[in-house]
Image 1 (cartoon, helix red, strand yellow):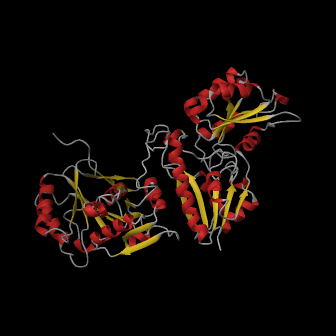
Image 2 (tube, helix red, strand yellow):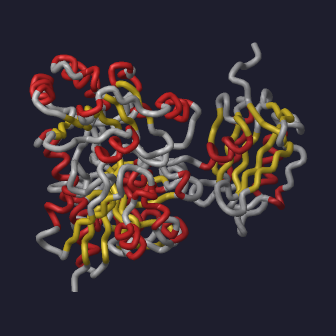
Image 3 (tube, rainbow, N blue to C red):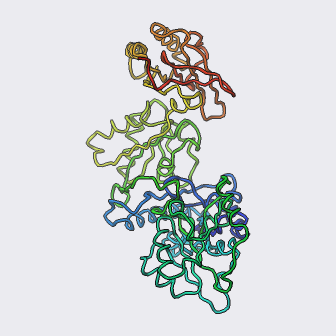
Length: 540
């Protein structure tokens, strides 16, 4: 028995404008799917969050590009079509397993909504229901306090992406109008309103019904401050003299930093339209690998702890995978998804793990190999690339997705101890002899660089921390600052600031990372505790 698909409209942004039916379905669903841009934040999810429950599977459908530039053979639309096809396959896997899938959509699902692309691809295959929502146009009219149309007036809804001459013609020949998808189209829309003789009638409404909403006469708006989630509104001509009550207060709320719960809706959260925080991004391109999205291996850094440390790129890659491969505790950090296969292995079989991932990719799987921290820092990236160098795997695409490494995480908690030159070294002699480790410690100490020390101790090699400390003391003063970070980002996080002379090796284990300062590293007392930093300038 197949599952059931719901396209659920969430309204324009205020969670209290979600319908009773939508709230019920969100709470009952097995799977919650939602779109986002590359930053990984989903306005739809933020609206639905009060109605979600623990244990639901979340499917992040993250657009793989942010501008209308791509090297896809089908151009921008071809790239999007491939993306939507892959998303539909992911949801179909849940539906085939009998799960109830809710696809969230700001505004109304079939009114410039992101959901419609899933509807076209899945509604003919599975039982489907669309739950309407309050549109952005209705939300804007409500916060403006002006009727859209009265009696026999006509309302025209236009996308700002139309050519300027088309916009002007349509605006000239209607009573009321709403122009959506502003953002980078704002200046063109403003010019079209002026050409049509309607500029003085037009209002600008941004993020309607949210705490971050803004209302202003459109002619007074600075184009550089216009996000995608905004619209232009020409309300009913019946009361042209009306002025919204306290429009300046709405602007003041925005300027004083009231939190934005969600965005103006009724529009799809599509790549190519970005808000102010994204407008400085460089043009990016998408590159599909394999056949129609054939097998591939992506080596992903999970960061030092939970989801807050995970990058949007890593979230996207994890969501796209059919198989997860990695050391058991690292695989366990990824929330379970029933459509994905999980392959947990021991920590000492890196080469075998890499070949296993590559073999699955040869069979068409999209494999995510997960590492804690950054995969290129004492982790799986080098093992996968080494194995991928074999002729058998020459055709398997391999991509590395960076992560926040432990040295950076510990440094951020202590201050800025890595502010100048530093080196990264592992005390483990499992893959290299201790003599090499010792020589490198002495060389780094003699060069007066800060040291980030990974894998400092384990049950079978507790002596190496003391040996490393003694080597460092040959070149460093006993008062040299040392930061000991344990389980940073986790429930047992602790940061200890001590000195090289006072460092107690018996307190160090594999859950720790050490930062040993240089001759210029300083500890200063501030409100809340000591702060460690290494100045950018080196004494002449």
